[in-house]
Length: 143
Image (cartoon, rainbow, N blue to C red; front, side, top):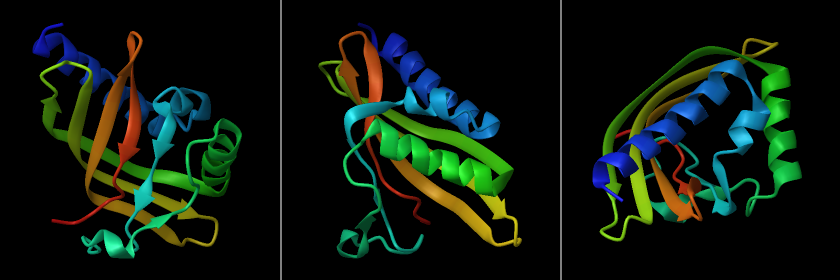
């Protein structure tokens, strides 16, 4: 498979995830994740040292993760969701890739508390049969 074809597939999955956030479509969001995904989060956008990171939900579990995202969608309104792919790297075997994405996503709850995801993430993908799935992502960090 050519790098150009893989690159387009990675762009598609990043854009699909963005659309899922924009529309708060939890079912679309769930199509992005690999069954073995783990998603570490830094405590703050300045927590570059992973010694300070946390695992909120553990290894991917469809029901648990779906409920978690639905809880967010049901308790917050999305005010802003900008995402820009800065770089895509593809393994020479064409079965692994990562995308560096700058995001600026702002959620506000009913009490006007802000949950602002602003900075850079690294989305790691694995080719599973004929489909790309996100197997890991760093939480949002400021650089």
